[in-house]
Length: 72
Image (cartoon, rainbow, N blue to C red; front, side):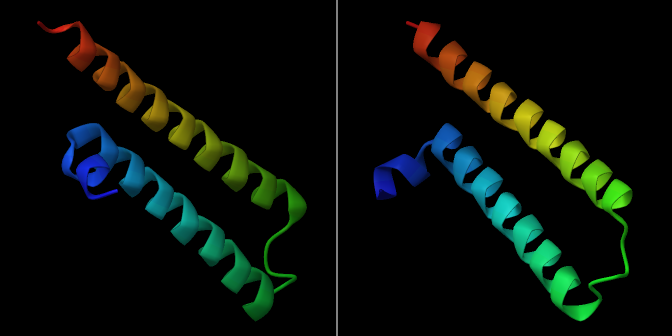
């Protein structure tokens, strides 16, 4: 595990997973504190937007990893 986190791409993956956990935790806190405070449309837009952001993030990390494999 330590070797995975010492590499650049491993660190980037760990940060991406951490951000996802924080986002999901924030949604859980929002649901507990103010369950009627955000509508389904707004929540859907927020989740879809975050999912697209994380998709682009993980694709760019994967491309970075593939570029490292191509170098001699």
